[in-house]
Image (cartoon, rainbow, N blue to C red; front, side, top):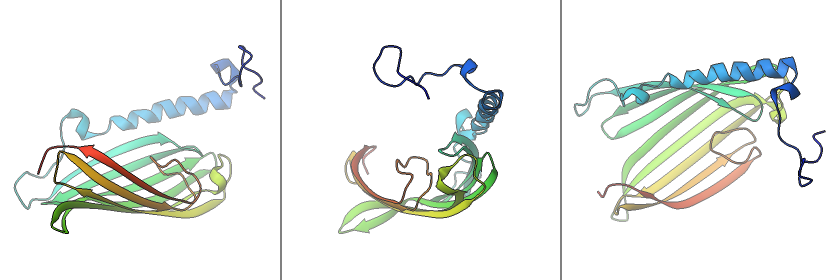
Length: 196
């Protein structure tokens, strides 16, 4: 029990290293070391893609990402591929909790030019499947399957680009999604970029 905050208002949420067990300190230290995987990203040193800039040539890139999750952490390998105006990403998710490893796979296509009702638009889509710890628990060895589908549509006519994004997912942790439970979300907004 954390008790009342020293000010007398709210819960005492502050934690010091001395409040943690040796096992908890070891876990946090391992996470801080894994965070260095995020430096394995060619974008950080100015390489947006490899393979050539000529039209029709295959472009590619790859990165590693470490991120804390609701049940532990994930190490993701992202593979970016592009040719002409077709751009995509394949992500291999490696989810970990205290009891072990769970796999996941995601495929995304980005900003595919479309003509809709006489307007220039871009369509993006993604789908993902995974096994994650049941109930998002840190210590469980039970796994639960899940998935996600999402579609984004943006109109590329003005500097302010209106877009709508629709995402549906089952129970599970997904970076950038607020809900851990089953969820359907719609986001409408504006992005800002160059005129087309």
